[in-house]
Length: 379
Ligand SMILES: Nc1ncnc2c1ncn2[C@@H]1O[C@H](COP(=O)(O)OP(=O)(O)OP(=O)(O)O)[C@@H](O)[C@H]1O
Ligand SMILES: [Mg+2]
Image (cartoon, rainbow, N blue to C red; front, side, top):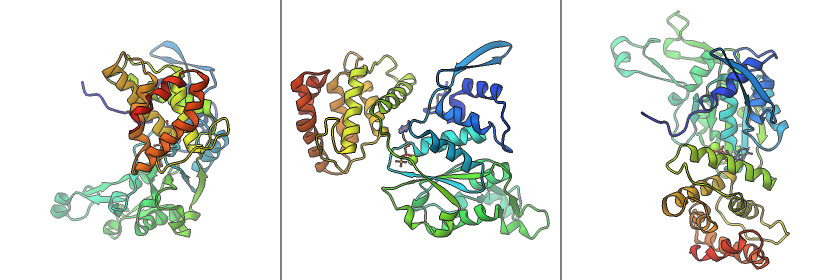
């Protein structure tokens, strides 16, 4: 049987959606799948409370898992913006869950997170609005049948949220395409506009909106035209501040990744997870929890990278050891994520081992000693 590597958010939590739909008492904005309050619950979780629902005559209940950690008010503001006439732009450092948040918002609001435009330097207008089936176009001339709709067309036509990833990486003329659709709420197909059929105009239906993401390490938001900036509300998504919260995220994500993998039996003990996440957290912040300054490199020490190292370590333990992740497995898999483009980054890691790991190893707390011993893999 074919197995998808990763399901889109709207397909990943069928029980949660069934329960939220069954318990949704609040009014929904037109074309929204859930009320704003239920969208919030989908993202922030039901805080341990089980929601009951019925499936095929059988009573069931489910606790809604927390999906986004951080500022709850940020999520509420994002939901408000999506219900308004302005787009939502999530900006921030790499790996702070901007895409994750946008995917889950689109899934909860529109039941569809796949209307996604992947912004890049090479993107063209027809990948955003529409293109043509050239065989039909040559045979019949321009017609609705020959038109191949792209995400913006579909989102406007069906009243759904369209995701625009890495918006600031796209050239200005393509950003301008978005501008006209967002301000006039109409998409024009000039080839069909004169034939009197009405097919030349797509009027945006209620529920349509755009959620963009932009990474502050790539081309900046400053390079967006001020006209387009005005069409968006900006939300900065910061890195996770609380170490324990970050540990929770990494544990959940790694568990999820392991479930469907070849390493189902692997275990990542809490004490090892703590070493891993503490390393990322402190290298990102430039100091340890004891206030010791540590060097920072060019590599991105984001939560997303910590998840990746956790997953790799578990795969490693399952393939080449006894399936239980040990501190040295983390070190073996660390450099691939932390050292991206310069040997300097390796120095940064070694410095961390000297100033942060060594003192803890000397005090013999937790598994720091074993972690320190494994420093020979950092080369
Ligand atoms: N605050 C958070 N809450 C929940 N998950 C988080 C959080 N921060 C990071 N993550 C996890 O890290 C990953 C973040 O990846 P994502 O691709 O969304 O980052 P991004 O901000 O879009 O990065 P980029 O700018 O590189 O595109 C997700 O898998 C998510 O589970
Ligand atoms: Mg992203």
